[in-house]
Image (cartoon, rainbow, N blue to C red):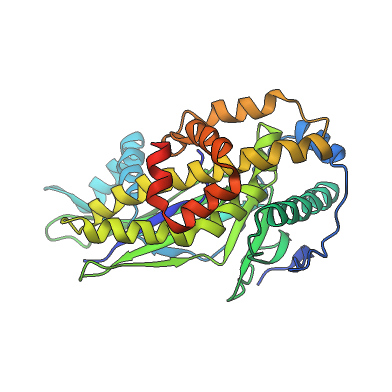
Length: 353
């Protein structure tokens, strides 16, 4: 599953650090000129699924996943259902999802060489991206996580580097029968997300129909993927997502306010629509900047890896405008494309859809 720069819609009715670098506005980050050793590590690695550490505490959510996987689990375990029937006795049995909670889990990057080389690459390519685009540096630090529940600074954006990322969903299910005490059963499921990078906005829709936007003060970048190019895109891609997210918020708000149906379903459609446009802009700019950088500083990266990455993304709806956007940005120039999105996001959208 790809989910870069995701937006999450909600409708209403400190860890020990292994490696930490500070990104300074004046580009004081070390800049190795050659990333060949990193490419070789990326081409020859196995993704691990243990040990798993908690990234954050459980949070209460309205989660359709918990609502759906519970019945499936019970249907696959008839003995458990028989035990529930025995405890509750004869008569109709009803069930409900009392609450659901979720948290992120991560596998730490325990290879010191990988942590060092990928951290150096991130600093180098971020500096390059900022210098080319004139964008401000949003980051306060880059951290390779070693232990769980890291502290999140209140300002700026912190980058957390991990080996692998998962989500744990817990649901409490209540079974009841007339005249019997309810029976509660907790279930949990862990799912590896396959997200090499993400930067999340939360949208709160209040009763008066006005969306409120808040955003995470962190972004999580994974050091593993089947295609090395996919990992290498993450620092550039997420830096661009962070830079243009405010314009995406504005476009969503304006379209939602013009929509006569001001409900959560309508908001979700608008969010999904504009996220595909943001992905298109970011992807177009990335493809204008990154291939040339990699030819100079990672010459051992196979040329085919770029097309393989594009082909992989083409199977996901959020990248449906990506190939067109690459052409549009090439014609406009990446600086003009960013300016257009900043001033008139709708104009860029019309060019790529």
